[in-house]
Length: 352
Picture (cartoon, rainbow, N blue to C red):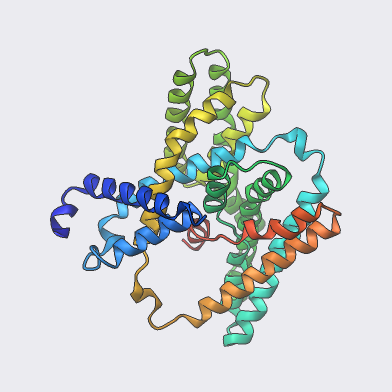
């Protein structure tokens, strides 16, 4: 039966969507976050009807496609929340919290890993990767809960800038390792690496976002706005992959341009895009779940647990200390760090 389904991947993806949705309805009364349900649904499928199948290989293309679409749309969603008028009111908050939460994760992971196995290079590498935060899960939960307010807004600010910080830290770590291991590097190499990861994405997103917004603000039909926007965003995702730069950053810049220009058609279009975004994000997290099997936990990776605990404490303590230092509201101080614990695709991208 499973082999037959593999010949019809769209049917299998449809089954994933239906089961994910039904599972979310089942656990809704228990207030379990949709993301957790989707992940567990994929995990259950991978370890039951698909246990004899190498999901990572069989669905590599589909996972890449759905992952790109999901991260691109999520990046655009984050961008539409980054209004410069609001950010200018709290620049100290953003700078201090970013440094505190990223620095906290780096320092604690470095010393925890070094104490655990004594490998200096591994400790530096994992510490650099610990600074990154995956926005997909957090943004999807906020979207599903229709959350709004200072906490929601500032979490999205931090998420937007966090991975830029992570890229800079990882680039610095790589330079250090190259020099310490007998290699050589130059300032040009550092600038080139950062430009490839972030700069090209920013330029691409800005140029395309500006053109898109000019066109959309001249349109009247909301459905046509959404259709054009989706087409342009898919183009940006493809262009980012072709250029070897960040998909989520490029789409985020498109959203930033749209939300900070005069006019409000972007808001109408953005609401409609969320309708398209929901099943894509659901399928993305179900597919993520299918890539995890019981075999991945045998033997139990103690180093992974050390890393997880150290990073979590570092992020929570850093966010708490940063918000307290800036005199932020207690709600921000006590909860902001919880929105920065997710880590996944962005980190994998940095590893690659």
